[in-house]
Length: 416
Ligand code: SUG
Image 1: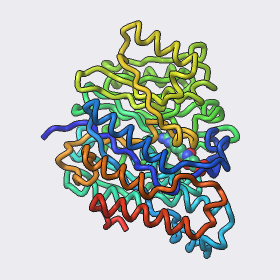
Image 2: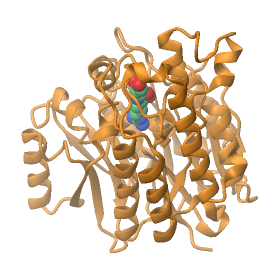
Image 3: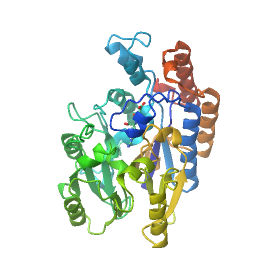
Image 4: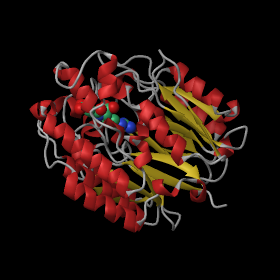
């Protein structure tokens, strides 16, 4: 049995578009109505997966969900033809690409029954994300059907749960017991706080976490109001290291004290606003990065290309590198199509610590399956989607066929 961290990326679906559906997500609002490029978007995502595999990391994927979600429209007595534009766009959203919001994962070593627990996120705060979970759950139940896993349904309403984007784990090494940190929001000024404290507490209970190794921290309302709609926009953790902006938490000294008490071996690197102002944090997505352990044991931060292009962030990265600090490498990736909807490298992936042999192999990437997926995307994903295109029945047919060809190619047609 070899337990490792596997990153499952959401394969970016053929209906990727910019509809400005997420209040509090500044990029989504700014790009509302822009033309999206689904083919380029999916190829960027696949290139990130390939680069991570080439770096020696275990890589998996989750498939795009069926879009437009006509079943969801039917529940409101609507069709694609007569739905108002905002609901039609919500039915079309490819937002399941942001797999960090698919579920919360507690590795087996943290859970009382010795199984890896997975809770699908209800994403109920925002309409276009609220209908993801049933199809996501179907997929999780197939990918993690092995008895090593316990897959749970969503936390009941009205408690919003946004999955791993508001959850961090620190541990001496991935396979060892760790501490789990749940970050919830009470208020976000004019923007919604998406992660409810009761949802976080429910997940900790149902996963059977040890109270002495579980910490609940409030997000800084000012950070949410500034555009940090998820904690993973302002903080990221991996093994012994927490990298956080000083404005991430409502009460940073109390948060750090709780973490140090539960995990004396942990290192906290705090980036100050003087070093990187909040506006640069949001536009560069420095923290929405994949903090990973390379096979050499060194930590690397896989950042969006926007990060080194931001002078304050570049200066901070240069200092970190020169100081021989805990992060030895910064690896930029181009995920601009996703970034324009507020999703960086960290949003695109769901981390699962498990033995790859226990995962349905169709959800694990190989060089060959990545090539086959790239060929399907190149041949079938629309090159561009403008807002008015969502009313075009020919585009419905196109994206439906595109997804079906992908699933057939990867022997996953049972996802329907
Ligand atoms: O929920 N964007 C996503 C971005 C999710 C980012 N995920 C993490 N931080 N983990 C969201 O706001 C935009 C869709 C649109 O506007 O069309 C969107 O859903």
